[in-house]
Image (cartoon, rainbow, N blue to C red):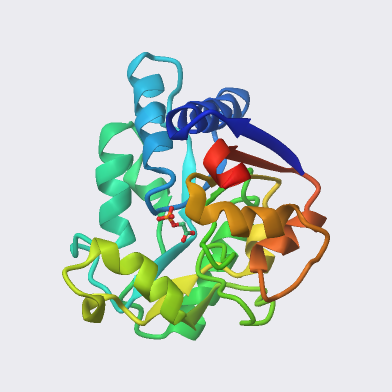
Length: 240
Ligand code: PGA
């Protein structure tokens, strides 16, 4: 794993955006694995700037998002579909048919999750996967001790994740208790992984990720066995 420690959130966002831009320049039809949450917001802002300056073109890019709350309607302003439209997709020339986000209203999660994995596979796999990390070490919604789930699946959110995400909702009771998430197997198959972390509250998770142990208690530690992972974090996430 390569670790890039940045001064602050802004520098982290610029570096991450440039890395994604480099991927798109090298391979215009890249398959990008995208993440939601506060952490990648700045990265998406910087990517939009690079697009507006004519440096990158999204017309052939294909995207697959990591996860979505369940159940949630796509027009709910807390859905990850809404997040992606309002933080990236509405501002770049990605084709609608190339955007994939797990459907928060799936009728038959078992079948539709399998189809999601199949689509990723048929697209040739993910070239670059962007990841955040939860304070409890989750990646996407692969929560601690949920066993190393391989494929996309429906999962229960832990109390700590519900609490962490309640900041976006009117009340904690409004936070969905479940989510559809790519599994660790799908994520581990990405050719390159870029994990972002910003702020003191991520320091413990980053320390564990950089420590010696691989454990299902901290799902992100599985990334240690991936051949191409770059962690871009700020000093607060690195040093506390
Ligand atoms: P955050 O979430 O970017 O909002 O901190 C990251 C995560 O939970 O994976």
